Length: 379
Ligand SMILES: Nc1ncnc2c1ncn2[C@@H]1O[C@H](COP(=O)(O)OP(=O)(O)OP(=O)(O)O)[C@@H](O)[C@H]1O
Image (cartoon, rainbow, N blue to C red; front, side, top):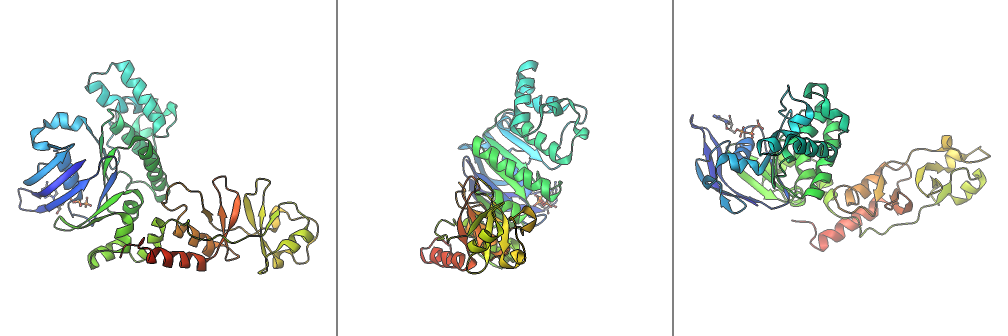
């Protein structure tokens, strides 16, 4: 656990970067600091490992006031990941990762073995270990940066805009990877970003800071999207926050409707008989996984069998068995499935990807109304 109590930082030139910050980053959770440029995110982060010393107030890590800790020893228990990874250019990937274990007295062999293990943990192939950082892509370098920060197995991880320098698709991969890693490792992570989407995706709690280093709101992502405290936060979390907030509401209470299915290769006559009243059916493979839709129009004038060329693609799928509500398994997931489907019925699938029913937009809206009635939606 990391506690900030009335922490301020005034730089020697008089700039107040952080103003009376009080918040607690819970043990084993991801706490995100988000806000516009210059609002004091990096300063707040660096005060945790004493790269910057607070002017006033108290910071405790694991219950201990960090002013009582030797900065070098304090930092051994705190991994640090920055934008562009900050790797040593003249050391191989493996040696980069092994840096801290070597510093803390591991043998070369043990440090290398640990580094190789971590390379795998962050999803990189072993052969990359022999390369130099500039021989890796930006996304790969960031993964190495994460592996290096994890090498000493620190309970705390500080991450300063670690994924900002890579393109949006790689960034999403890295975010997913971090969530997967975190579900195994359970580190106490403080993560800085200026991207509110990244903040609500990764954070168990999100602190929104305003320029001048003042805390505007500290809440769960769901509460932040549903009930921003003021216009600044509302503007910062964005226009489509109502829609995005649906991502934090579980879809379980949506009653599934029936969907008509037709196996690929079935006779066209049979497919016609199976069309729903509205004139649509989902074509499935032998494991009942959806392949696309056919309609009365698409089949008109055809005979023989339903082939792959006869299908229109089906939009997104609503995953009813998703273990955690992030996006999958949520009202947002269900609504998107309905809105992106050519038939206006979203296809609901189980954990194996097999069709279990359908959802329409009206039933998602009804489930939202129910969630509001039962107080699940913060107001
Ligand atoms: N060493 C320094 N000396 C003086 N002022 C500083 C120093 N470092 C940062 N600042 C100022 O403190 C304020 C907060 O900076 P900080 O880097 O913490 O913000 P940030 O939210 O991380 O910004 P960004 O998103 O642009 O990285 C800014 O006004 C910045 O100019």
